[in-house]
Image 1 (tube, rainbow, N blue to C red):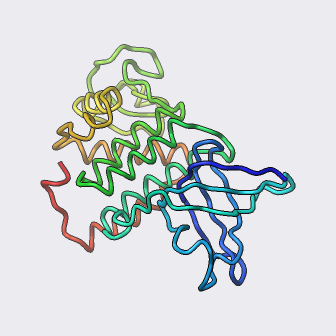
Image 2: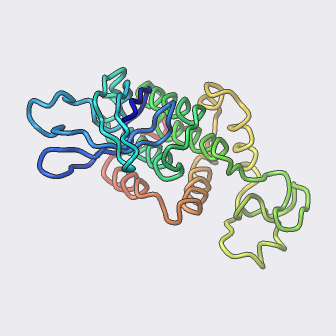
Image 3: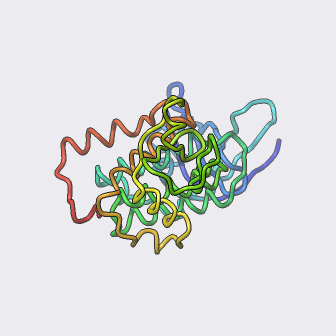
Length: 257
């Protein structure tokens, strides 16, 4: 039986049986891990509220090697990120961030940079930053960190150097107008959005959060949605939650820019 220890973030938690809980973590040292927290749903569980979504803590688990699931022994809270879950708009964006990590990574695929990016995004969401902006900055960096960086300097089909008129975005990057006519699944994208995407991935995290996006923010969000949907095979489930929240709650337009 192997003992594992690592800083980790809860990215999924579901009831299992009468009193247990199946929990998914994204850890700094082991990547994505799924495990069983015995008796976690009992009133006097030793886990308490530690297994709430987005919680950062120190994970201790046992791995028998006979199952994909580990046995969770302890998860001591380092930072609960309570404020992320207290606001629906913030929670909706956090859910999208968490889903990207959960669905774009394989189990036991260690990626320290992505773990750091996830924690940085949760800290920004809990702070005063606009939640939608944090999700955009996270999405741009997450896709790049996992090796799916779209090519933005030339057409991925014919190699024609950008800039060219009426660009579109397809699988792998930009597509010129002529190639887009023969390619399925491309979406038009404005030069301003292309420029913003380039700047967001080249600036530091704090600089990217402060970069004015104004009118291109909505298109950037749509581009990221399309990229993530293409990678996981379907639209993120958190997107529906985001839309419901937008429908039910007033949007602070100034805070979103």
